[in-house]
Image (tube, rainbow, N blue to C red; front, top):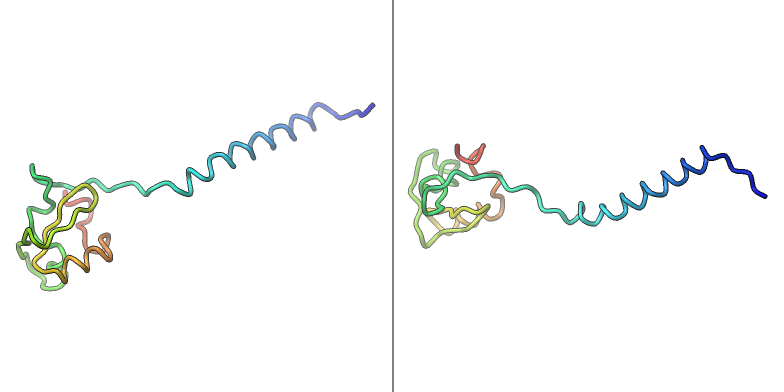
Length: 103
């Protein structure tokens, strides 16, 4: 008969159960999407009142965006003054989006 102390068995059992739980949670954690930032929008869902956020960085001034150069990101519609500005935003939205969601 094998004599194993109950303390050793419970540590092994606890370790095994922990490994099973972590293994089950790992795929969900790896595939989880990052949390969306809350964006301040108008009643139509347009961010920063339709101004081109990239223009603030490139030109240092407020430039009104145009509907034909729009992009949906983070549950908000963003307008840009040019296709170039829109594409810059698409490539790195966190760089150009206002901090704290525009609040």
